[in-house]
Image (cartoon, rainbow, N blue to C red; front, side, top):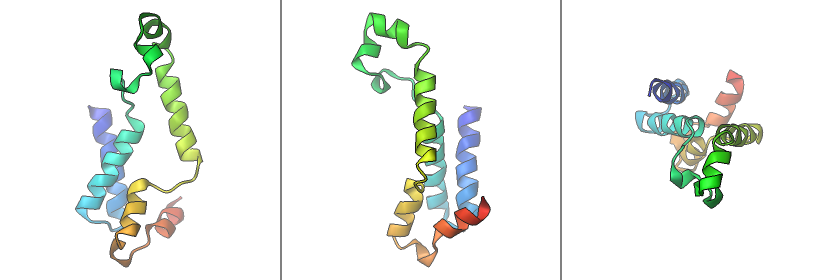
Length: 104
């Protein structure tokens, strides 16, 4: 859980630095944690991975697959889903997109 806590706090701190409310910062923290802390449950597995042979073969492929999906998401250049929702909700007139680009 320490890794999950630190990733949540990273997203939360980023949103607070941009001036978002506690509610939006919490949502951003949850988003960052969900993106980076991969889910290793049966619900996250394909039918093949749930079979006897699949469990043995997929044991070493789930992390690389999850990591590749994360890199593809980050490489797409799309803004955070939470920041998009924030802007659609009116966002208090604050555009977070330029603020994020200036931090890089």
